[in-house]
Amino acid sequence: MQHIRSYRAAACIALGWGLLAVWADLYGHMPALAIPYSELSSFGNMRIFWLTGLLAMSCIMVAFPQRVKQHAGALQFAAPFIASFSTLAFAASFQQSVLPPQALALTGIVASGACYTWFACSFCLVIARTTSLRAAIATVAGSLIIKIFVFHALSLLASDSAATVVAIALPFVVAALLKAAESLGRKNAEQPNAALADSAEAHAANVTAQKGPWAGIISPTSEGDWPFPQVAIAAVALATMRAITPLGFFGDPLNLFTNIPVSLLGALGVCVITGALSAILFANKRLGEKSADFLPGFLVLIFAFFASAGISPSNAVTAAILEMFITAAEAFGHVLFWSILVVFIRRGGVATYRFLGCATGIYNAISLIWITFFFDLGIANNAVILCVVFAILTLVVWLADRRGVQQPQQAAADAGSELVDRREELANRYALSPREREVFMMLAQGRSRAHISNALVLSEGTVKTHISHIYAKLGVSNKQEMLDLLLANEENGEDRAAQPKDGDR
Image (tube, rainbow, N blue to C red):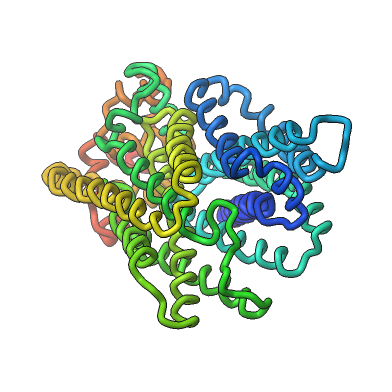
């Protein structure tokens, strides 16, 4: 039953996040919004106001993370109403005379952007807390595939009025799916992944209290890794990729696919490439343990940059294939960006809302710079893109160099990673309670009683009692015997499980 709820939660997240992206694309592509865009042309590119809303919410999360966390329930309730009303206000701004139309339209698009950031970060938090890492990556990739197909279907088949109604209604559908995913996640609270996420959040709160509000963002996390460089590289790469692809910045998706069958075929090609890249590059079950784990993903984006700037298609077929690949590369960039955030949230040691605000803030700020200064440069964009790619490549080389520096540390940690592989198996086999699971997961990492006490906000006496119960259930008498059991091969583990426990003799 728990596995069924997990799949249902993942489906809700993928569908909700995908429809959120559909709503954003409708905002930029709907023919029904041509009048507001035309009337506001004197204010400059409307993408600037959308990105301003995105960046404003990111800044609020950075500046007031505790207040955002305290009022998350109220924000989740208010966000769909604000987003829906803002969409309606923008669409109808120049068809009414009660309020100044230009002010109403600009307010609508800024408020919509802020709501988008809130929903996206909320979905990221849910998948980080309730699913495994591989499931989280599959969920993000699935949401992008849903978005591509649903948006194409709407843009090709729906009338202007129908698309407007859908855009106004979508925020409520997104909010309902987010709520359903959270509810299903809470019902899975006894699962090891949920216990790990809760202990990671408790550890993050403890680290923040000890080292300050920026702990884990501009300093190493509890695993000794630095989130900021990887997040910054992913944000810059994604923002730059969005500047050159059809899906980015309110562009016309898949320009070379004009009729309905060919357009759907192009969308299918983008989805297949995105899914294949995600599956191949993120198949490692230990993904995120080392800084270099995401390097192949960055290299794919760098290759896409060079392909976009340096390849001149010789015919229509080559141009269509190149467009499919570049569009899929942007979608894969989203998978890479959000997967990195999920890794560091699950790992712990970061203040969650401030971390999300910093990451999305960097991404939105770079996007705003692109759209403000470089969007209309034409062929000169290639020179700017190559400069950005050089900077990204420099950072990627730095990450690869860190891999060499970390190898001695990693060699010492290999034995610990073997323990991690079997924690869930043993916790299930010996029927540990939810709290015992939390203690066991950290104990198997070599954590001391004092550390576990601080991370889980328990007294040392309570932790000692839990450890005694864990030892009794596992049939061991001390920590070394527990570690021996974890390191034993599968056959030895089964033999040990068949032996009577002390209490049964």
